[in-house]
Image (cartoon, rainbow, N blue to C red; front, side, top):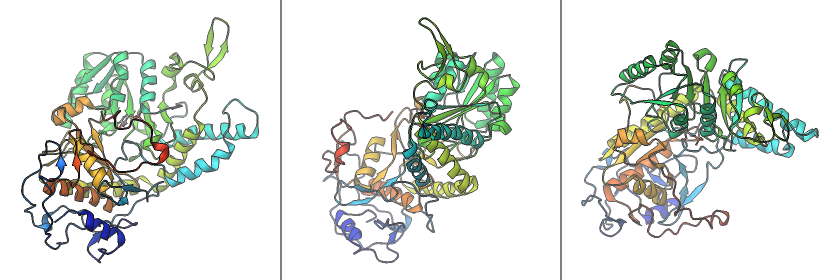
Length: 508
Ligand SMILES: Cc1ncc(COP(=O)(O)O)c(C=O)c1O
């Protein structure tokens, strides 16, 4: 059998089954059997019919495949590239016991780098008002906030007269830019809703993705040629498939038609360097929580003129020069668009994260994530009924993201099963990219596994082993039609109870 029975798990956790060559994993992850290693025939009762998902569609025979053909994470261990907070966190299983938590949902929200958490801890004793106080702590806080702006500008290669707006996240950044853009915005239909819906208020012209990347670029070019547009807004990397867009080509297309270009860097910046001045990019936006700095800030960096001319989206203190009983004159950027008390902790955290990414180096990040993604995708493709989604198959470079469907199971079932029985966190849904999911998966939900600096080969192996169990033997536990465990005995920390988590799922 290529899955772990509860009995096996408890033996493994106690070390009783941890024979050399039998288990995969480093960094304390000794709970996963190497599926390449033939295991003794099992007399266990086949699981299906006994437990499973409501409307169970699990195949009816015991796995006929030789174990040697089961997916593997490939040869050689790949250790995490950087230390993340919570790397050795455990997750309880519905079947009993617990496993090291495998976080393959990095593209949604990445845990803090240890270096980031340390910088925040160093800063917190000085935490005070920014731009509003003369006390020493305020001076330090203001300095830290403005220094963060400088680090961010340097990291993205901003021009000397660009502005760095500290915002809440990418969504906030594009809503702000949409307020400032003086004309139509052209964009593709593959975008995350954050780089799609804000433009609808400013004259959005959507271009459908074509069968090839080349044809898509031609379609964008034609749309921009048809009528002038102020802005071409594109993602640097798809949050659904991980495919990178050719920014050099897109910049050339935008410039040829007199449009500026804004890049959604939410998925790009954690994985690839961007130099906006050298590349001719006018704006880039990204979120702290995707660059291992989850303290509530994001950024919009780019040309100052449109933002200086736009009235603020958020009105209040800090954004003004003068307020009379009837009138107001607003400050210039960046203060103009940073009303309210600044999120200095968020800004400090982003700066620390970017310094750490700089220290690690793009080459190391790319090598790490490429090696892991190759194992992940190769392993998924070996599994029956698993289909990996791609926009332009084989054409584009990719970041460490792979989205897939599993025949016979809904994405919700797969995700809940992986969480409940294998301690693996993935994202399921339509990834806030409904038009793209309509194109790639008939509008159905899918499962996304995403990798980052803290990911390892044993993480990939755990996911593959879990899916292998699902498609060959079905789940051990019983699940409802919504995919949730019918009974969920997993305890939550006391401070995480009391809300209606399951009743208010946000899986779009
Ligand atoms: C490509 C892309 N753009 C924009 C966003 C929105 O980011 P945020 O929710 O931090 O505003 C996301 C989030 O997943 C994303 O993946």
